[in-house]
Image (tube, rainbow, N blue to C red; front, side, top):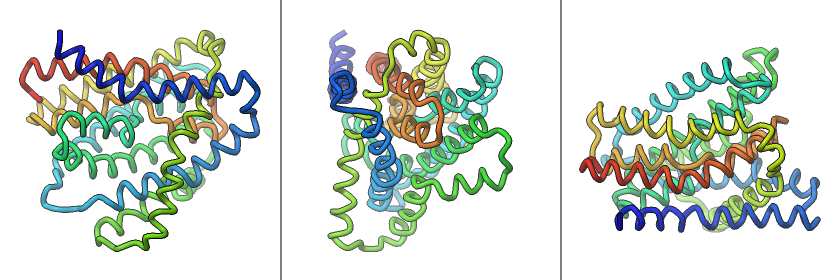
Amino acid sequence: MTEFLAVLSFSFSVTGPIFIILALGIWLRRTGMLNDGFIEGGSRIVFSIGLPAVLFLSIAKTEFGEATNLGLIAFGLIGTFLVFLLLEWVAARWVEPAEDRGVVVQGGFRSNMGIIGLAYCVNAYGDAGLVAAALYLGLVTILFNVLAVVTLSRSLHRRQGTGRMVKGIVTNPLIIGIVLALPVSWLQIPLPKVAVQSAQYFADLTLPLALLCTGATLNFRSLRLEMSNTLLAASSKLVLVPLLFALGGIVVGFRGVDLGVLLLMSSAPTAAASYVMVRAMGGNSVLAANIIALTTLGSILCTSIGIVVLKGLQLM
């Protein structure tokens, strides 16, 4: 019980500040300090500049080396793609209206690995967790963004051709930030200090601004009206996906840090970037915000239970 309470306390220390900023966004919207213009402009800044800066810096600083666990990364990529296909199948049968299917699918598979997932890994394993998770984070994030563009494009613009969908992926600012960072990381290209510091300023701005805009968009009346879609996405994100990744990892033979990374990265709540992308593409941003809020709260408990179970079985 003491171990469980300690893990629960840690989880809250990571997710607590996120909820405080979400609550601040709700309060500022109700007092009139945040309006639709601020939310629209702030969301565009996060999507077009802030998040690409975050992804570029996190990947550019990652070293490709002998310590890279290609098996773990391959498992993460294949597992993510299979989960995506499963959620697409589920959404096609149980999510209405059809325009919300991409929002639910993205909310179900897209983890906040760069903030919460990485923090989980570092706290659990220190530098070993950081090394194991860094490149995993960078490469799986690429797949996250590609699949997010695909599912949102399919549900929001179902009649567009393959060419337009590919164009949407290629011109997506998040994809561009990741692709630009890969050769920098691979070749260890030194970057000008002023450029790195400037990008870091935008990166530091991203999460608070994204969460403020997300909180300001939260609509609890809509949460009640769209409860089935919200719960479907949240249960997939907090229970189905971590369970599949943990069980699959055990079957494949991962143990210790590697299995821990799979659990902690997959059980992180839905990424704040999902709200920004949905809003930028004209989707149901209120549903996206509600999924983020519910999964962030639920992650505290679900992740803690997963850690205690695997530690009790001496698997991580």
